[in-house]
Image (cartoon, rainbow, N blue to C red; front, side, top):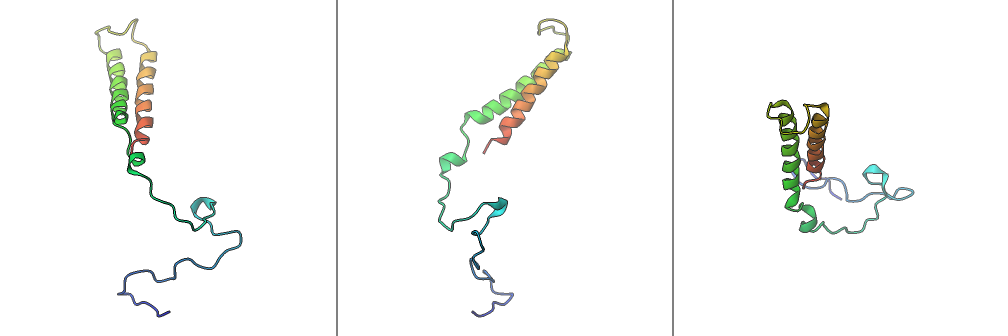
Length: 103
């Protein structure tokens, strides 16, 4: 096999390689079989339309709950409490968690 120069694009080493004992391993230690894996269909790569709505709803409810706790409107029942802050922070955390699942 002729050696490629720096100017020639493409693979320098041959594809594949010598077989290792126990099979070739991919990243993470999983063994590769060398079989073709088809690409993931487009409908599984994108999230449904309700996911960004859910994210924004969680963020909005969390911020609104925290702000209303501090405003003197007395919309929430009882006196201002840390529980309303915990609920607001919980909604914001739920928004972040659902945002990590968005494609």
